Length: 599
Image (cartoon, rainbow, N blue to C red):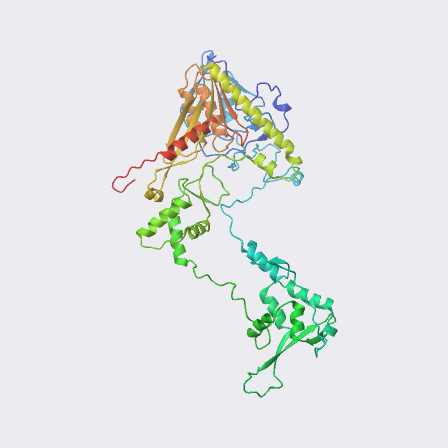
């Protein structure tokens, strides 16, 4: 028997006071993990028999690791991953020397449920083996067609709202005026509702008042203002007007005679047409004679209005030419784009360097125009063209992810359906923070001799060079990745830095950094507790778990490694404070090396 009697690998955060087993928990779901073709873990296990003893030798090789199902209780005391690897239904996977034989290792490594696409959010999509009855979220069953809880539909946010002319104050006033409603004009006077006026036509030869009653006039007036459109109203009035030649002309040399006369006709509720005078016609529709003059000037030979409001669709005199807009767009496109910290499949935005903003870009545009003897556009025009860019542009600013559960609860009108889920979420947050605090105190009291408590996280992408030189903004940047580990026992911070030419920012790199850190620990350390967020693409996946399994078997001093994940959206890791310190120092110290025109 080897020197170590048991190797305990705890792949989950298990509260010390919790005595319930996996079978006592409510509903188990499985975290979905990404399946990559191969991962260089540099470890395979081979059983060798010599005499009466059996020892295990770790041989350097590339291990093609397949998917291992990891159970996650959704409503437990903390958001953790129970170590359920290929049917190991225990809360702790205990491997003794006699159990670590080749068939067992092969069984663990050959779990291969059907691969699915990994969720890019911090809360991974449920994943189950092929023999499970679990239904994925994208294939909802009939029983799930009516959800009991309020579903969160994130709205598509815009950096800046586009102007809606229909909501402008003058547009609203115009709509009210054309509709005959009450409104306040520019002078601040209140204009009353348009109603037909009472006209005395007792001496009129057409006897207008006797033909149309006041109620019928109100019906005609209402029909007119319901059109609520300048052109349609003029066409409506022109259909009731008719120009005829003058039947009798006066022979007076000093008077200019009109060639035509206007006839105004109105219909009553019975559909009978009757001729009325101009005064009664204008009073019925609550208009002035100027409206009739305008219609007459733009009336066709068939008697219909063919004019239009010249104030509408008129181009402003200071409109920006298309060629100038293209020059501004070319200047905006000259800035290199950077990738986001988290890969969002549904994101349609492109991100510019966090060193930039609209003011800096416009200042650089002014310098560009001065060098090329061009007249720059105003800052308002430059900003408008920037917001019209397709695809949309945004300045990348690393920030903590918001909690989806809290946002759902705050945004929902009826909070009762989601109150239980929210309260459980806050309870798990509190318990996970208390557990992290207990492990920190334990590590400080032990002074890091046998027990270490660490937190780790990958910082947002650091593009270099980072300087105030205007020419640097137009250069392509090199992405640098910084993985930080904070040791709570001695308050030490460790940074593992590499650029995009030496590696990506995936789970393989994270596992490698953790393994390098575990190698550097003193030989007296036997137990390490790690805390991280629930980002499935970097921390919470099978590759990091396999790297910890390899570390326990490779490093003779380590007996237990706890992978503990904080509640989603409320991580509060000490490693994030390291990132903030780096950002502050980086913001105020800019160095640039320029040699023969090369940066």
